[in-house]
Image 1 (cartoon, rainbow, N blue to C red):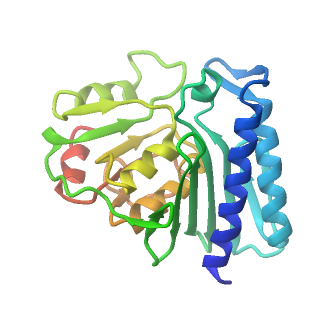
Image 2: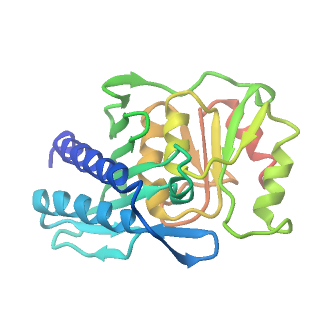
Amino acid sequence: MEFEQAADVAEHAAREGGRILEEWAQKFTVSEKSRSNLVTEADFVSQQAIHQILKNAFPTHGFLGEEGLSSEGDDPDYRWIIDPLDGTGNYVHRFPYYGVSIALEYQSTMVVGIVFDPNRNELFRAVKDAGTTLNGEKITVSQNESLSESMLMASLPVATDASNPAVMRFLNVIPHAQSVQRSGSAALNLSNVAAGRLDGFWSTSLKPWDMAAGILLVTEAGGTVTTVDGSPFVVDDADLLASNGLSLHTEVQQYLV
């Protein structure tokens, strides 16, 4: 299969998903999946459109999506991993930091990653062994090797409390970095690590659809993705440290384990 062609289809699907999000932005209602975990009709409509575009183009592929989408295809080598709205809480509050994330996995390896930010009309795209682009222009991770000069992002579990180990990791890093933030969109955090805007990002509470596209964006842009203790990253496990891949990665890691 030609992965660049698959990326073209995924890019089209991501833009359509983003268009739907913006169309629905002023008219959705909100339901509760669980406390602090909001979902809107926009999630479902966006995912349905993305799934249909990809399914029409690749009818034998499997699918995994945030909003209850899980199907095995006739060809077990391929799996699309979809987040139709990464950053739902931000979207609900009209905070403009959310996006659409689409990845293609081939034989357990990410080969296509697309993240679309409809607020900035920014399309991040990576194909395995072909690098990462932002709106068609090549991007790379930052060259910052100093934690004290770094800007980092972290994901924390929803509805958590101060005793959660993830909160303690966050507090451990704060004194040593220039800035540590929590944004609400893992896909955009990873995209911005790939673009060199952020130096690193970590989480121990994400789902595969939050990370799948973004990890390829980072690695193809020259960065490193591991677990927080430095072990090999596995997309189905909620354990991620992504950075520019320099000595900063190891330096951050020492405050996370």
